[in-house]
Amino acid sequence: MTAMIDVADAQKTFTMHLQGGIELPVVSGVTFHVNPGECVVLSGPSGAGKSSILKMIFGNYRCDSGRIGIRHRGAVVDLAAAEPRQVLNIRRATIGYVSQFLRAVPRVATIDVVAEPLIVNGMSRTDAQARAGELLHRLNIPERLWQLPPATFSGGEQQRVNIARGFISDLPILLLDEPTASLDAANRAVVVELVAEKKRQGVAMVAIVHDDEIRHLIADRIVDVTSFAAAA
Amino acid sequence: MADQNLVENDEPLLVAKSLSKSFGRIKACRDVSFSLYPGEVLAIVGESGSGKSTLLQMLSGQLAPSGGHVSYRMRDGVTRDLTTLGEAERRFLFRTDWGFVHQDPAQGLRMAVSAGANVGERLMAVGWNHYGRIRETASDWLTRVEIDIARIDDAPRTYSGGMRQRLQIARNLVTEPRLVFMDEPTGGLDVSVQARLLDLVRSLVAELHLAVIIVTHDLAVARLLSHRVMVMKGGRVIETGLTDQVLDDPREPYTQLLVSSILPP
Image 1 (spheres, rainbow over the protein chains, first blue to last red):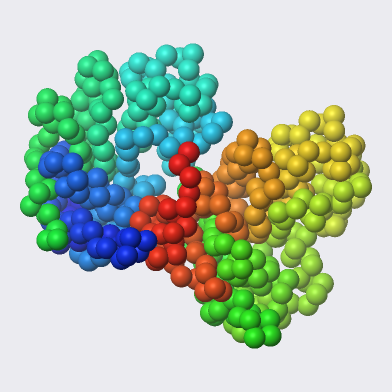
Image 2: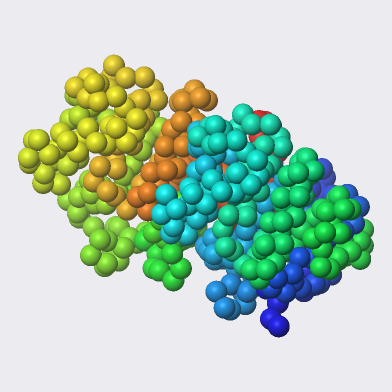
């Protein structure tokens, strides 16, 4: 089987120029792969570099060295060396990212925030909104809120909008950064279901989950990030 | 940022090669090179005096470079060096395929003529002559930029700052340009007015598949609108990359300073 994500010897250090040039090693020697239909959970204590690894796979953080192999439209692309335009294309067609917080654009209605990834990939607004509505229903966002911008919603509601937006598209790779952090039991169960559906569709996922029960329910494999601790 | 604009494997729309500009002994801009693709939004950030406005002037053919050149792929598919364009050709490009949104709307609008005429003028410049159609298209554009049609016959000097800026945008976009230059388009506006304008620009850029080169000192504007940023300091490009990469993982000391100077929302 060909891996969807193949990270090899990736390294990241922050140099803090404003603090006298201190070097903050984040991770080094990061090596693991993710197959289609598999959910790999990154484990390790806070500060071990889990989110940084997720951001490196998304191309949000640059790697100092190593390789982030991504299967994009049938070919393997090294995201760590890709041009900005290529990274954007990979994000549009291949990698989705569900962050902990919704970065909402002011004035855009919730239903459109959720539907946008489908519209971007060419679906009609009506169809995209119908799919967005289904997901918002499943995640218990009441219909009376759909036309409002999510900026004024509670933390949990915003996170559910964010999850709906992340899960709506049919991208072959999904990165999940604590998708259940501020959710109640019922909504956590919905997320577990959504992850299971994505697996059945062959989506490769990398997740960070602090809740042991959820981790147990979604993880096919656990990668311990402490083994990538950068030598300080 | 909506990135449906970006298509793989296409040709650049505008290419800058080793652009430099000196004013006497002052080097305002040194050795700037990049390519801009159709539908791509590039933000040029940096503080006052970093050379970003000089660069924008050269890119838009308003200032002759001391060194290097800018080439542009015209609507007929032929790539031309801007310095070889005649004055008439350059003006035509400016009226049709390009837009330029100034920080001060008074520079981009005719303040004493009606809003409708401000928009219609661009159409007449490209040969439209049917009054009814011009007015219809102008009202259409006023609606798109959220200006009440009842104000179509009023001159922009009776408009608020935010309305003037939206009118300037309508005037620029009515000829369906492929490339729009923007110089601090939200610079003089209140924060609430800024948010509305940015949201409007963001959706128009996506809908019309516009390429944009936007100069701003406001990193939040760059984050919301652009795919890519170039950070300038002392006339040089010191860091460039995908917008979220540069803003979330800045490498250069100056970029780190800029990013760390943003007040938390």
